[in-house]
Length: 225
Image 1 (tube, rainbow, N blue to C red):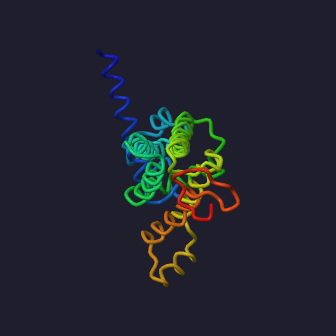
Image 2 (image 1 turned 90 degrees about the vertical axis):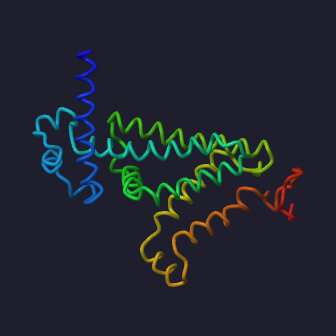
């Protein structure tokens, strides 16, 4: 009982420190935050802070993990839908958009944590993030394979390559350069329309056979096949 209480107290203290770090990372980014500021906000001395987290990077991954857990859960829900593979893929792509819209600070940290600066970390939370991100990717591959089997997704592509293609396209569509945003807004194309159009542009790549590949599928909608 005593050990359990101590464990709960340690976990509570750890979460309080993560909450403090999250507040600063959300407001100021990674580089502009100091461990002193986090310690003051969490109301702990630096010795205790470093007992729980050996450096600022470890705290950054702890915050990022919270966002990745949310995103992973959203993909799992899509994967569990009682629908065809194509609809699951569309749902997953939409979930990424909703994550970026509903949790913009987590999405910003998620993108930044995926840069080369953090890729070689041996931090435990970083490893869990990598595992969960790989899990998200596997769910998409499984949905593509299901779609290939049920006839809603074309069969003349590699499912792994397609999953990466879709992820790259979706992530970049949510992180376009400022100049492109200004150009689109000048044409009356805001983020939600741009995202909707992206999914429409992707449909032929997902569901139609190439014109130079002979199609034998009854459910193919491509009149060029």
